[in-house]
Length: 263
Image (cartoon, rainbow, N blue to C red; front, top):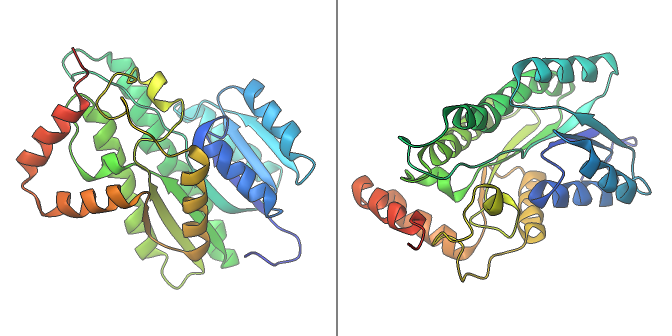
């Protein structure tokens, strides 16, 4: 745990629902003040009201898929001299459908959010953590990171980037006092699926999914321990172990069949 007397902030992206919201509750319970970043602050305000009894909670409205908005956010953090000890790259979105049919501007915004925003924030905040010799970075990828996903190609590929980036970062930061952890949840009870129009997909239909709170707790503990990769769920761990040794073409075909919605 962090015992420096007065705690510096945890910055959490995508904190308005799901895993991000549950992570905010865990930090607050440990007395770590929060900077919550999301596109719409109306939902963050309810969370702020809930957690303000425990810690200071600052809200920043920012569309992280927009480079200019991100730069404004980072400038504001610098101007307000907010020291960040924990960076939680949780914001992300999905897109369902074949590459040939998908709306490009949606795909582009997703790639900006899932990959570019996370890289930009990490690049901006890590140097200061290195100077102080303390920091934890928690990045939320997905079990999608381990295989191609026909029917959600760009989303799966974006999560492969996230996992690769986070693992490399963890290695670069060895012996610096900073850890980088990549949390890879499987399908979870969050709004992600309804937003990606996926309630009918074989990934979710008729399955008892873990709650966002369960997944967040595992990620939070893995981050505090400095673990590089944390895969949620025994079944997911076993499946990923077998994926890594299976021929790529077979893995791709199986993933395609799982992602197909029941016609």
